[in-house]
Length: 100
Image (cartoon, rainbow, N blue to C red; front, side, top):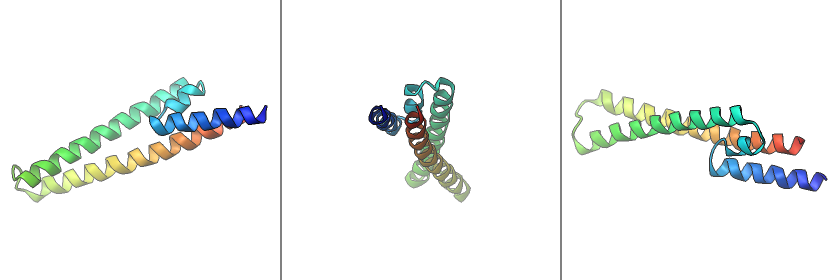
């Protein structure tokens, strides 16, 4: 019985690795999974907006440094939050499935 729990825990972790929140959905934690998916989408949007501002600055369409700093800030916030959410999602999905 314990071996099956570890198999399920590994599968939940793999699901969360593939897509943040999917492991929580697999474990039956629908609300938590949807919140993680929503926060991941917001983080991805912040990263993309930051990337667009950096791209505009690199192409010369934005000449002020403030936009570059804002773009770099958004990019870094998005990147760090995606990484933190990803690690949390994987660990939480594994631990929750291992307890069942």
